[in-house]
Image 1 (cartoon, rainbow, N blue to C red):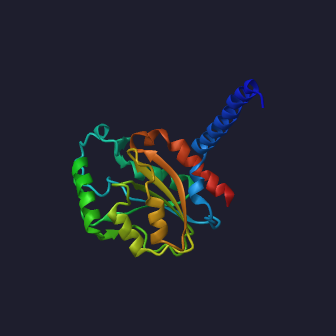
Image 2 (image 1 turned 90 degrees about the horizontal axis):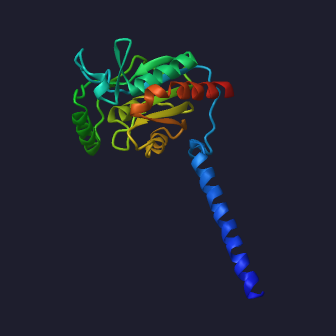
Image 3 (image 1 turned 180 degrees about the vertical axis):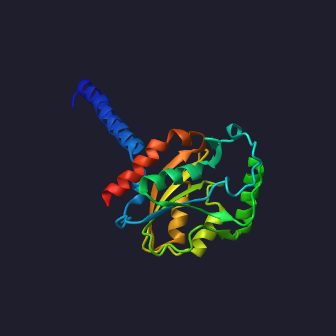
Length: 229
């Protein structure tokens, strides 16, 4: 091949390769979290429950706590609500389901940083705090909309206690996570290990400070799953 033509073709080949690489990056960036749901087959949704663990309900906050100062707290119509709680309530409302809170027998500190430190300590000790829920059995429920915070790239330890106590084999578990930049981390994999016979789906992760802006996203996601059934 003449020198002049070879030099002309090389940039074209490089351009084609670069274009292909860019296309792959775009497809990856725009891909849904569904890639982590390959092979997960869900059952039709007939009766569900929205289960959540939140700082509100697990902390004795003073009535005049400033919700604005914490990304994990919100004051709605005068009522203090946690991020994971709000997601669960939107899911429950959309699905016509009950919202069920996981409540640890121990109370977590009012100070956020102290709660973070305690969560790390619990993880290190692999603690399983005693819990209580407003529902005694999930026998007649086929789907759980689970909303939890990402604590140190893991489940809060009371959520481990929840999975120890309840067998969700054969049921759908749609996982919603609130975080401050860590996304799902390995939370979905951990839940799949804890409930190997359940249909665990990576649903939606929301940054804590943006939860109030994501109501439509959560509702539309739940509606989409209901429509599939």
